[in-house]
Length: 192
Image (tube, rainbow, N blue to C red; front, top):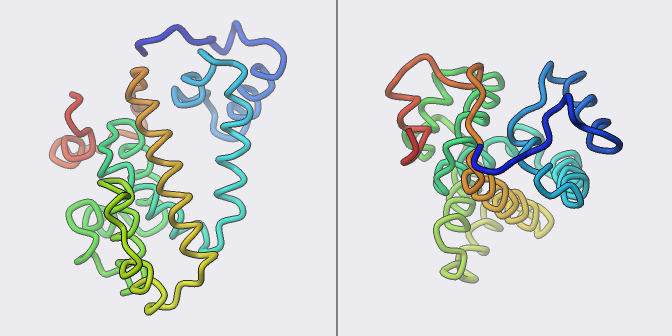
């Protein structure tokens, strides 16, 4: 970590409660969570917004994780790509997650999911180039305006989080690192 954060044993008040809840649910306090403790006034609103977006996501958890992973890949984020690759592998299997990593367009996903991920990729690469035609294509494969807004929100929020985590030096915990060095290298972007 490049910045000083509040260690779990030093946490007090709301941060201690947040850390304890994460430790209870995940068995650890993740570096991603600790990153926010450098700005203790921000950690709780950011966590609340993440949960609100994910828990109210109109397309379900799998599509949320696909979007999150693809956005993290194209940032690129050495932290979030590793973490969400592991989460995605748990949902769709490692083989298909590797296929999504290599090329989501040829990974056995539905046409709707491919369009969703192309939109998430474009948001990540350069959202200013999105046109009405891009939105029409999403509607053509069955997405409502609520779905489109949710895709944009999930991808944009992941861009924000991923860029912040890498900017302050978060490193993926060992249990999130893939055993295959080639996959690990593809997931880490430019950071070793």
